Length: 483
Image (cartoon, rainbow, N blue to C red; front, side, top):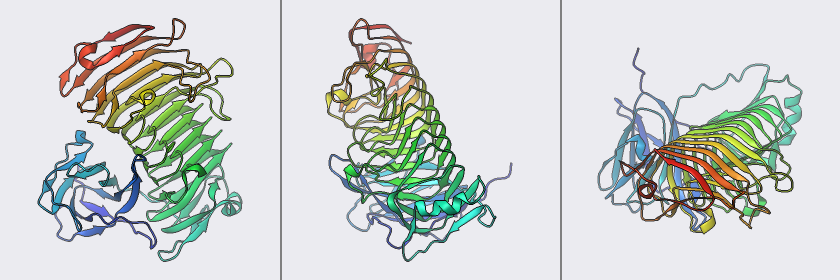
């Protein structure tokens, strides 16, 4: 097999983009002499105490060298490049860091143990941009100097074109009219690298939508109670979201309600408000989330039953090869909301696999757990697998929290139960803020049954008992096995 040539692709930054200047960042293909400067965007993190971190992105093939220097205040005594499972090591001097990448990676570069003013570096694979010359393509010309506008007004032009049309958005900043753009079905929206949309996107009762590219949805200027999502999908099917970056949506990054056959791939997101979850799914089926990086100030991924005008259970959902960073609440949450007014819902056939957990930071007793199944609202949660979960030291919380509960903040009724859960190949790096994990039912009627924990490791050592795993089993629980 021929060796790939080292290539680097940088992307334009429009005038007016909100940048952060804590770092001077340069990149070059290995074997070349000339560095290329990379701009860094501002992203706000951690609703407990909102701070400004940095984010930068580029694409490459082969191998590249990254250099970081510090114009303001750093003298380097420690560098962590996370996820730690990638094994990337930096070469550090007093004011300079370098390291080499030979494969795509979504990274957090942390100097002197600072997780709140860190550099998020998204180094992707070279993408193939679509042809923008065909009759089925509508091009939105961009400007690097002044903003443009997008929104529902462009839909009439798209709907006059055949289904399968493409809207090609060139680099530039675009304000979305009335803040949320309601998209038409059977459309491919391509955001060229350097395209920044200010506002959210939505699809209602639609199908056949694809949104991809290396564009940014920027929502940092919207207040919390505007409740604007990055992308809201309701009562829709056959959706692909890929490659996008979301900066500070005040509500969810991606909201799915009564959706099916959805793929969410390689999205990156930051949030810093209450209820600013990552990917939340209500009453949805056949959903794949993969190769993502979600840093949120509420649950990173949440799977529910009925909520709002969405009715029914959720099933066949996979989340894999993804980094989860919960500055607040849970990295992985299942079960809070359901059809409490009737018989409840079934949430089933859920897989979390090959996950790096970079943070879990919560002090409210009812909201702890890296892996949380909190069955409420008459929900029955069953057939859930957690496999190859790598948990780095976190600020405060529990590794797992499997409870049938009645959370009066959200649940008019307790859940019906939790059944048949597999926790396999979990590696925990112990930290000072960890509380014991809990498995507990609610009553003799609403109980937990069938929990298998296999190959559970702490700090490289396999736990041979629930006590060594720091798992407490409460009342109304049966058939818990440690293998």
